[in-house]
Length: 201
Ligand SMILES: O=C(O)c1ccccc1N[C@@H]1O[C@H](COP(=O)(O)O)[C@@H](O)[C@H]1O
Image (cartoon, rainbow, N blue to C red):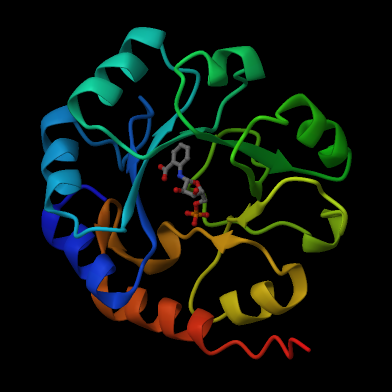
C-alpha cells in the first residue's frame, strides 16, 4: 500500500493485513511519512506488515519507531539472527524453486511467525506476479505458511484448496498500476478466499 485510501478500502473489504514496501528498487516503495499515514488510518485488528530486501538495520529501526508495523517481512538473503535482532515478529520470505529445502528453511527460521512462500525470479526479490509449483511445498512444514506469488482473483481459490496456507498475500494481482490497488480486484480476491469450500470435517 502506498495510499491511505487503498489501505482503508482493503480493510473495509476484509483484509487481515496490508503491506508496506521499503525495498530500495521496488516500484511500490513507500516513504516513512506516507507509510505512517497508512498505518495510522487502519481500523483495529488490521495488521500492517513492513517489507524489506536486505535492509540496513538503521532503516528497519526507523520504520519500527516511526511507522510501528505489527510485523516485519524479509525478502532478501537475511539470516535468522538478523531477522530476530529487531525484537519484532517477522515473516521470512522464501523464493521457492525445485532445489529449495523448505524443511531446512523452517529449521533455520524456527522463531519466525511464518514462512512467506513466493516464486523464484533471478532478477527480483518479489512482486513479480509469477507463481510457482505449489507441489514443492511439503505438507508437514512446521511453520505457518503464507502463500504468495502470482496470486489473483482467478487462481486464489485453487491455491487455498491445494496448499491450505495460513494466509494468502497478493500484490500485483490486485493492482490498477504499480503501487495503486484496484478496489474491485481486491474485493474479488477476498470474496474468492472467503468462499472457498475446504470441506473441513
Ligand atoms: O512488491 C514489490 O515490489 C516487492 C519488492 C520486493 C520484495 C517483495 C515485493 N512484493 C511482495 O512479493 C510477494 C509476491 O507479489 P506478487 O503478488 O507476485 O506481485 C508479495 O509478498 C508482495 O508483497
